[in-house]
Length: 102
Image (cartoon, rainbow, N blue to C red; front, side, top):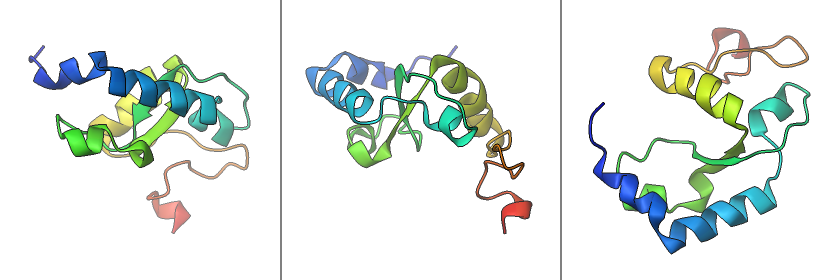
């Protein structure tokens, strides 16, 4: 695995305060909620990957709350493929860029 020098940002007080605020303000997993499930969120996830960009890393508008399962599966898949997998309880794709959503 490649070294990621920005990992140090996750050890800052500023990040810990942001993470705590994010999970307090949005305590449920955003992806599960879209599926009609109620799951406590445990991860403050960056919506747009920051790749070390500190402005993007510390932007509270770039955060969403996810459970570990969604973060480690659906979100990682989305970052690899560019598409959010799955559909909501209404049967429509979760990915707003899916051709059925247009």
